[in-house]
Length: 160
Image 1 (cartoon, rainbow, N blue to C red):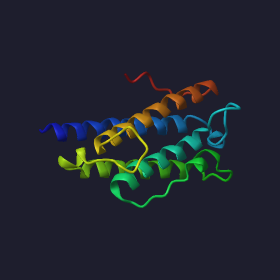
Image 2: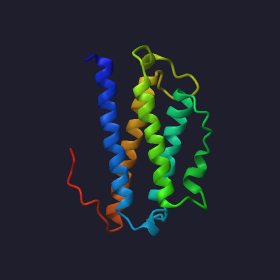
Image 3: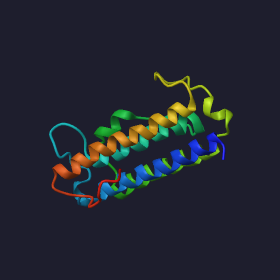
Image 4: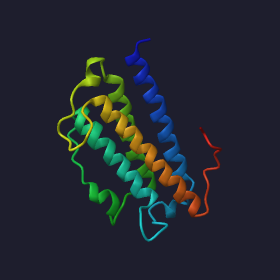
């Protein structure tokens, strides 16, 4: 197997693992608490779902896959009429599926194609995929803290 295939396949495995952890954290709290901020500052789990979907749709969907997605980042955190928790999860899963399909579609030369539209230190498609995966991982830490701080649990042992 080539390095390109190995990188792609391992990134997909790890990304899917992260998405399953997001799902576990959101489902660990009662449905009516998904869009409730557990602290005066910060976010709710539901708004983080909208944020992750927006991030994936913006950077990978619009930036690489050419979906035409137009992001409203502030609304991801402040939507006064958010969707149901099920719809928010569905949006996040649809965005994650799009990321995986876009990853699978990359040819060896595609990985080094430039990213030029963003005010970002990343220069290539590979770098942008890496940033999006890391971004999901970052918010899982935040979600884990929120779930535990509100007296709930995913009931999962440490995975690493």
